[in-house]
Length: 111
Ligand SMILES: [Zn+2]
Image 1: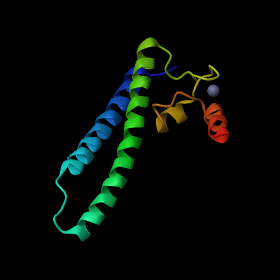
Image 2: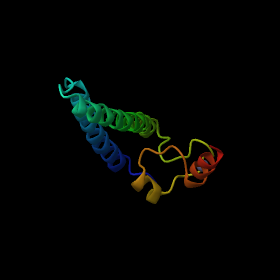
Image 3: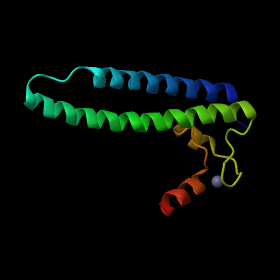
């Protein structure tokens, strides 16, 4: 049985953390480039890394919103692929996952 309140709290805390991090990345990206070209090269390398992090964060944010929606309609904790229950231990580590361990492994292997 899924503890909806506890999972929602967990998801919202993670969401706040990710959104805070993304805002810091955006702030950094909006800063004007440095005058010194050498620093500039390092800067743009940094920006690429940060943008990559931003994309990963965005994907997780989308997944968290989807998980919150599933909490609302009562399908949270049920695998979206096979319909089995997702174990609590798995949800503790990946509260936004839509897949059980078996399906997640199969999906990863197909890639
Ligand atoms: Zn499954």
